[in-house]
Image (cartoon, rainbow over all chains, first blue to last red):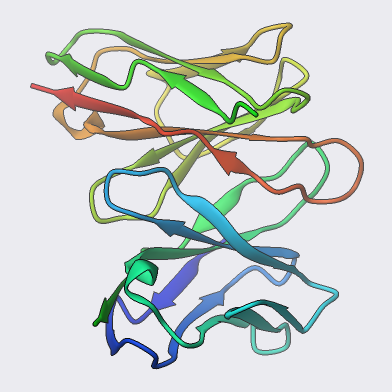
Length: 114
Length: 115
């Protein structure tokens, strides 16, 4: 089955700096890669996603890149703010339509210091 | 605009007991998935249902079962509870259907504690 590795497990940055979180996946059939942000005691919230036919996607301060050949994808957060502090999860999914599942990485605890 | 809702919020059970968790998807969403999130880990896939049929099952024992109702709400049942079943149980809904992969939106979860 699919295996998703996520690094680093913790990341501490100064406010205004950039943060990068990297994930690798094992199943070459995976075609959808979402990123979720989970604040303490809250639900995971979808912040950005990318599909296998796209190499990069950007939404304001957040961007995701995908390298299908190397089977890795990354989350980039620029101009970090204290409210970006949370646990971030990457995930991968194969299949489509009405039959698919998400396989998650173990998460990255991002701390943005004021 | 109601999101995914789950009940109860918290639950405390003892070993050997049975538990039923409930989920209502976003209006118009036809697929519900269940995930188990142990503290400090990412969510792990348990089941996916679409149009009342099981479409996917993760690596969980037969003590775990689920079903989806005609209104697309869903129940997750766990029998013979073990201490290791203590976790946050998350429900995710998506539109599903067709050939594309649809975004999944999570509910707030049910925190299950097994004593």
